[in-house]
Image (tube, rainbow, N blue to C red):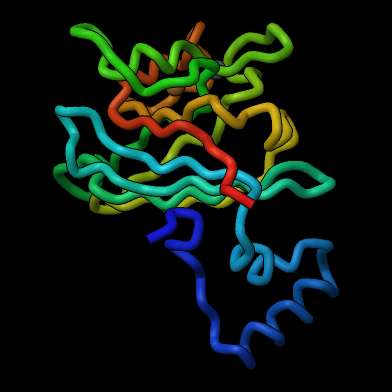
Length: 187
Ligand SMILES: [Cu+2]
Ligand SMILES: [Zn+2]
């Protein structure tokens, strides 16, 4: 299956039209319609050897106001009880490959994509952390820190620790546990 077409949100036709009409009243983003279209880029996410169950897709939609990022991930580590829900650092990294070495399974992803020489969490590639829900995470957000064109060929990384949005240079988010290279679909 073409990865760009999987994980589509399908609404019943009638509901879809009503939803788009409602959303058009309050916002310029007909979200349900947008998410059914092919994104301008996407990354298929796979876990490291230590986390072989992690799998997912991150899609990038270019809008005039910024980029809508849609991430759907499964197979993440689970917390042990209701007070230990897992949170995972989530970034676009500057490197262009998910290759690794003995110390870092995704060393080729290098560090956070930082177009404007900022500090963390103001790097262009800093994204909201993913909240785990018994191994699954879903996140949809808008960012205008980059355009889709400039991140094609770079990498999406998931970490095993929460991003504290403070510690330099990467929010103390720990090890890289999953990676995907951002590619544009064939047109
Ligand atoms: Cu990272
Ligand atoms: Zn950062």
